[in-house]
Structure formats: C-alpha cells, structure tokens
Length: 356
Image (cartoon, rainbow, N blue to C red; front, side, top):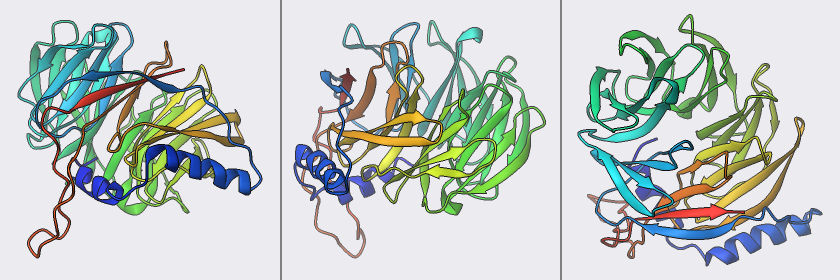
C-alpha cells in the first residue's frame, strides 16, 4: 500500500454525495435488483481525536492490551482505545507502512518503506530492539505464527523478505513477479499475497520460502487489502473496481465478487460474526456476511468518513477501528501537478470506533 494513494482516493471522493446518501443509494440499488438490504448493527461508537500532521497507512490492533498501532510518516503512534489517548510511539520508522505483532515473542515489527528495513520493538515497552534490512520499499508486513517468521511485501523490488522473528535473521528473499500489496497467513505455513499490478494472488510456502501457486483474480482488478477465514479456507481481497473477490485458498477459484465501495485499502474477517469487511475511501465500510463457504451476501454499507480507507478489527469486542482526517477543497490541476491532493486540515486526524 502506498501512502501516496491517499491523494488519489481523496481526489476521486472529493465530489461524492453525502455519506448517508452513498450507503442509501447502494442499498436501494440492491432492493431494485431483488435483494433486501440488511443491518449489520454497526454504528459509530466514538471518535478519538489524535491531531498532529502527516499521512497514515495500516493499522494493527492488540486485543490483549487494547492498544491500536497506527503507522504515521516516520513513526508509529500507539493509542489506548479505552483511555482515548496516545500512550506511546515507536520513532525512527521512515515511510512506515505496516505493523505486525508476535505476542508470544513479545515483539512487534514495522515495515519502513523509505528505510528499506524493519524495526523490531518490544511489545510491552515499545523500545526499539533492532533494525533488519529488507528489499526495496517494504509495504505490508505479516507475521506467520506457524514458522515464527515475519514477511515484508517489497513494492519496488517486487519480492518478499522472510525474517526469523526470534533472532532477526533474514532467512531469504522470494521473487513475486509483480508488485505485492497486502498478505495473510493461514497458520499452517502458507502466506497469501495480493499482486496488485497483475491482479493475482500468490501462495507462498512459508517453510520452504517458495511460490506454490499463482492464481488470477479476474474479474477483480488491482487487489489491495486481504483477509482470511482460516477455518473455511476463504480469502477476501479488496479490489479497486469496487468488488470483494472471495477466493478458495486451496484451489484459487474465485467464488464470489460482492460489491463494495470506492477506494478500498483494507479488509478484515471476524470469525465470531462471520462478517467480512472492506474499508473504503469514499466513506463507507462494506459489511459482507459469510452465509456459508459458498454464499456471501452484502449486509450494508456503514457510513464512516471520507478518507477512512484502512482499518483494524478487534475479534474479541468485534469493534472496527478506522482513521481519517478532514480535508479542504482540492486545488486546481496544473501541468506540474495534474492530480493535486486535497489538503488535510491541521489537527483533525481522528480514530473512528465502530461497534455493534
């Protein structure tokens, strides 16, 4: 995931209608198509104002400590979601994109896109323990508990770096044949990776560090976020042509493509509610119910806020966390800057907490 995508998403969304109108229009469209809109029960519980300057990317939630990790520029900020305040930060993470946690090792890991490395930190104290080199522009990062390895998805070098989470040793680099986005581990020594520029999913053997399978995602285009139902072996890829590709993790077959909002950048799956989520930059959270391993139904689009494109899920409380800010009008395009970004209004960066 590239932080620069923020501007593209916001530019697309700048002329959008009111959020409630977006959700209502999509639900009405389903009624006209013969399906009745459902009700996920999700609504905005509260907002936690963070403020400050700078963009953001992935979020990660630690259920044990009720702390939300937010990548932001050259640092990761840590928010206590019950106390509604920032309780710490991990500095010196230039161009940070993602955060992976290994609770059993009491370690966390950040992928630093401009540093071409991973920061290893103590999960309790947040103190930096080490820096580990990676490929070029590490973007998403995922922890595989089966092999106790961390994998970074390196966008510029189009490969993945495998790191021993216990020692910090680089175990290998795997060529992916395209630009990787997000990834998901199944807990059985397999890691699945979205290849954005090829519209594919690559399956890695996380023990042998080899590519096992490569599956086309058509009609999905430019997959971004990825989540997994490890029990039913289903992958949920958020696609930029406004659909969620549901994929069989054993055969690679695309089973369903329920519609989602515009500008998706993250996906999640809650095994307790059987809901799959897509957070969309147009200001909606699409909720899809897994009726069975073969049937997936859009429940509704919950109104969030423009720009809230990344999220984290707490599987215990079933709360969903998103971040965004308020933006001014988009500047007029110029020859030098044909797609200008809407400027962020200072001190408006906020965490949105959605609950049932």
